[in-house]
Length: 390
Image (tube, rainbow, N blue to C red; front, side, top):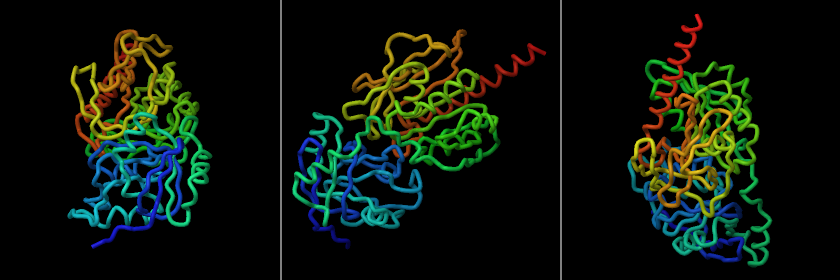
């Protein structure tokens, strides 16, 4: 049986509040933005989600680690969180797929974490005060609280941070279509999760994953039927190059689908602003209303920024008519956008949440089918147009 550490550790928030605990995972020092996740499962997918770059994740579920760590569920090649905060970690894993414990993986990857924290009180504090900078200190890193607070307050804020290039692939790669190939899609990797191109490939799409620094010429080079922007970390206001690329694609009539960060950049490409939420949406139980189907979905989220678009009126843009397609039922935050041409035909769409369901519910899997329908309709329209011109 594994034994939990007794090494003292402390969590220090930028407003001066502290929480005592014990070291978990790597011992040392880390700083980042404190955010909380409401998921009761899927911690491995959360930890390996590139969207969490620079963030210290607080788990609201009290007991974490009971299923250990396996070799199949990673959403990227490494853990991306800056730190991890738990209340009651499992002493040993109990799952037939487990290869090692959660703590062993955190230690191996050098992720400084803290256990034994009153995460209920910490979460309530973040809900009232908002996401803020935080530090976890253990072992030789522990000093007087004034010194630790200075280290936390010297850390960069998430607002204004450009992080997508840090987690993106450096070289293009291809995820082959499963079964008969139907379409080719260029996917801009802003922090893409492994399951996302998998969901596209399952629908007969050959996915060309491109670095975040790719140009529109790079997109055109793969002769795509459509363009996809992934999830990712950081402030969407810093992604001017990616917004410009998307605008070129929209001018060229390329069908578009965006997820999470891709939704925020779609909003900016259409002329809307973005803003930082007080504490964001993170977890796998967020209710969203799809205005297209009049259905409510339970969805997986991980975002701290949102699009500032009018909920109840359409907006004319240089690319067509934009409208809000999805709304969060908790706080009326924009959760999706659609773009139609003058004839009412759908040209592009995006959602703020994660339909790939890793981890999370499968309510939103239909969005990948909607993208396939969009690609098919665009191909049919192009064929008809060329036949008419001939």
